[in-house]
Image 1 (cartoon, rainbow, N blue to C red):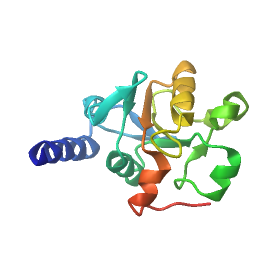
Image 2: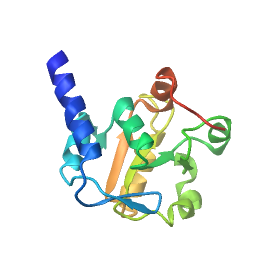
Image 3: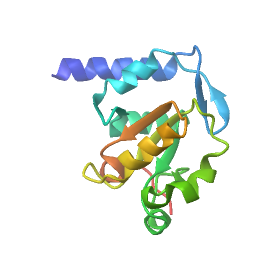
Length: 156
């Protein structure tokens, strides 16, 4: 088990550091190996046809400005705390908040999160974004709870 975790970490690190083609981050083109799509999806089993990223992978994407983070929680919860730079597209008001995504390229990596693994808001918003034409939508299943437990930064 330890060996396979090490291999996964090396593959993810390699994917995040190798240049080739295709990823946009917050409007700036950042290049990443095309095969990285597969390595990110392999971190956990997909949920509702959404590739799942772990807190560690989400953090690496955030550190490298390799993805647009989308907070699917309410505007009130977002105002209290969220991952720095995250766009708020609440599951309960997706259409009304969709204009916030107008400048995001359709092929950008998008990481959608909510409160924790049992929260359904991120799955709903991630599916909505896929239906709107975004092709690289990832589900950060353990959400802001895992982010906080890892001592990672938050903003309000």
